[in-house]
Image 1 (cartoon, rainbow, N blue to C red):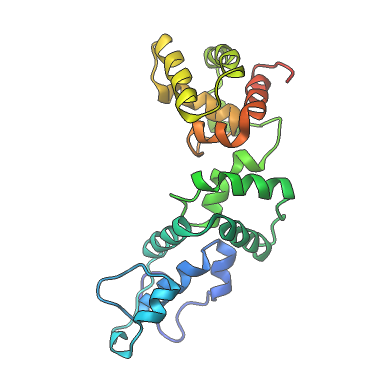
Image 2: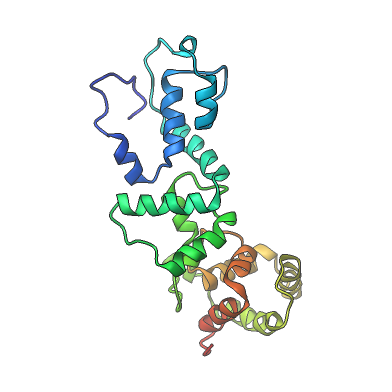
Length: 235
């Protein structure tokens, strides 16, 4: 698959290899069907739509060309519309197919709870799992090299200021955004700047859902514990 025309002998990669790479099955079926058949200008369609729309007149005569960018775009749309529980099951199938460790019951429950804020921009299951790191890992959070740079002494000091403000706050998005925004303003900085050390403390990564989604998914107790960990305090 390199953008060249496909032939019967072209491309050694079988469909099962794409499962190991983390492409969702509905997206693969959509893309492969569209390579040799069309329904007007529709690029994205579900299995049900393909069955309803299919007719021989739509079969193309020109050799198909494999385009990874288009494949990922279509797969991302399928991930976005998939039922959360079904998506968790698909992710588990991907982990098994690629010989990775299965999810623990705790991780499975966390992934299901977080799925609403993970699936909108993920185009493959590895991308989704990278964003889900915050809910799949456990304390103490070990920041990667890029996110560790956001935890300097000044940032940790601001997180130390933030922690007691969260202890008795209503645990909803509007309240959390208000507290963090007010603190950022008090320090003469933007919310995005304060979000960087928060991401590092909560996830240890720079590619994450919004800090407020992470806080809502993790809950008050776990959020405060992770913030206290980076401050060197016992939770």
